[in-house]
Image (tube, rainbow, N blue to C red; front, side):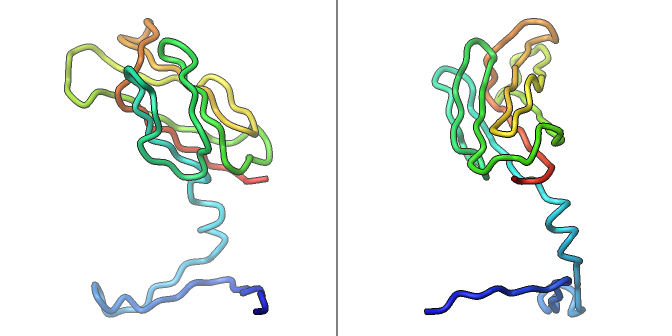
Length: 133
C-alpha cells in the first residue's frame, strides 16, 4: 500500500445539519490557532491525569507542585500557557494556579490556596499554544 500526501490551503464543508450553508476555514488558522497540548489533572491525594492531549505524563512534585511532560516537544519555551484550578465542591477560599517553568519538554505548575499557600488542587487544567518541534 502506498502512502502519500494531501496538500490543501482551505477546508470547506457544507453544514447541512445546522445551517444548510457552506463553511470554510484556512488551514493555517487550524495549525496556528489550536492548543498543541492540554491536560486535565486531578491533584488531590493520588495525582493523576483525567484526560489530555499531547501530554505523556504528570508527576506530583510536592504540595501543589505538578510537572507535566509533553508527548511531542514544543520548538522553544516561548509558548503561551494558560491554566485554571478549582474544587469539585466549594469549600470556601480561593484556588489559583501558577505557571512556574516552561520547557520544550513540558510545563511545571503550582496550585495555591488563598493566593499564598501551596496546596494540592482537585481540578487543574493547563493548555499550551505555540509551535511544535
